[in-house]
Length: 262
Ligand SMILES: NC(=O)c1ccc[n+]([C@@H]2O[C@H](COP(=O)([O-])OP(=O)(O)OC[C@H]3O[C@@H](n4cnc5c(N)ncnc54)[C@H](O)[C@@H]3O)[C@@H](O)[C@H]2O)c1
Image 1 (cartoon, rainbow, N blue to C red):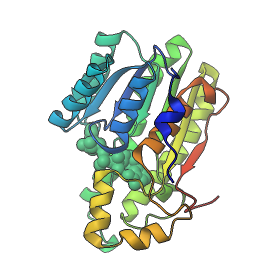
Image 2 (spheres, rainbow, N blue to C red):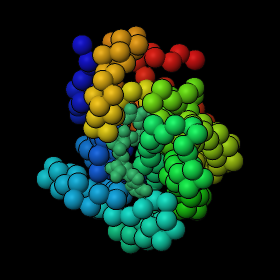
Image 3 (cartoon, rainbow, N blue to C red):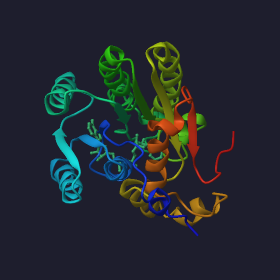
Image 4 (cartoon, rainbow, N blue to C red):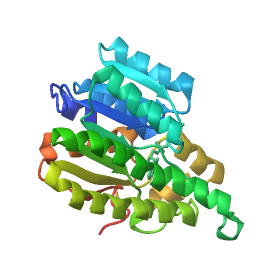
């Protein structure tokens, strides 16, 4: 039986008063992070390309008396980044936590990947994480503190079973970036960690498994006998972002039901 993440968190305020910026917050893991961080006392700045869904997430948070500002922006575009950080500073006057979640990949055949497609995936999964982190770190450095959590993947630890080589390479790159940032930013009390989900039930992934007809086979390959829930990834991001993880930096946390043990 799946343990209830929400029950375990009841009554806690793990990120109370923190200003948290989450990319890709309109759906899947990013949305789960937004709802969970809001329930734990954070003020949120949420980024996504999907305007309507993003506004719905903000409204859901505001209905629970939480604070959330929506920003429709593309994290792969410089003008998107300008807009994101200007809005965060104008709205909240600072930033404490960055969750680099926006990302994804397609099951493109190796020989069919064009240079444009390679660049698109690497820009989204890796370059945007670098650029977002660089801008956030400028703010964190001035106040001598901050936290970055990067969504890598089980693919970054090993090989993606579904997405193409560009996805695997970019998610492995996120792990290297995470370690290097953790090392150089530690002196400014900035912690940087990564989360490596296995197969998680975001709509995108469920749709892909159902279309391919590989859901049963996938579940059989996972020692815990089920795919993971978006809340079970959000809770790991929450843990790493909170003071519970105050002595953890440069780490990669596997959240995969035992499907890859390292
Ligand atoms: N779901 C999984 O099984 C799984 C497994 C391993 C890693 N991950 C990683 O976790 C993260 C979230 O995955 P998910 O399954 O929840 O994805 P998802 O597709 O459900 O949600 C991603 C969100 O990011 C947004 N987004 C995409 N490109 C963007 C851009 N350029 N600018 C701003 N927003 C953008 C999308 O609109 C979407 O709302 C990704 O980095 C993914 O690679 C997911």
